[in-house]
Image 1: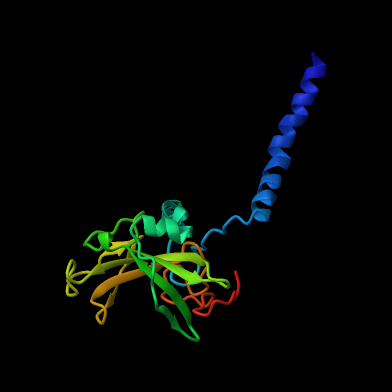
Image 2: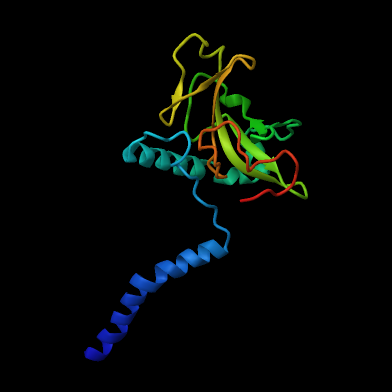
Length: 195
């Protein structure tokens, strides 16, 4: 009887001690996407509970948009394929290419259904999904009303575009903050400038 307990004890110890580290190493080697950083610019003064809620929302958005890391999948879901203009603002960084899903332009903000997917063109031509943008047209939510909200954040007014908006950098870390307009790690030139 003792003979059978020893191998099971070793296996149990292996699963508790060694396996989690090995799994983490495998994920790192496989290029698993890093989690978007929640703490940072724009989240000062938030409680740990508020930051945990935002992190959960980030994970929900990532799960809902994971397939859209392929532009073809995004197009099949109703997002525009061809976007000519990449939005940038050197030296603050760039936003990237805004691929809109016109069927989502209304007065509702749905976390798992962002109106815009924000991509960056990489060397060789492929696109990388960096984040999402929530927008509500002024025609659906007038500019003189209290701003719509998502993830506990007020959407920002863009009078020139006649809409409310908020970026969320869920696929690419942004040192300027999760909800910042510009990301200094994003470029409109198809050149890799960092993680």
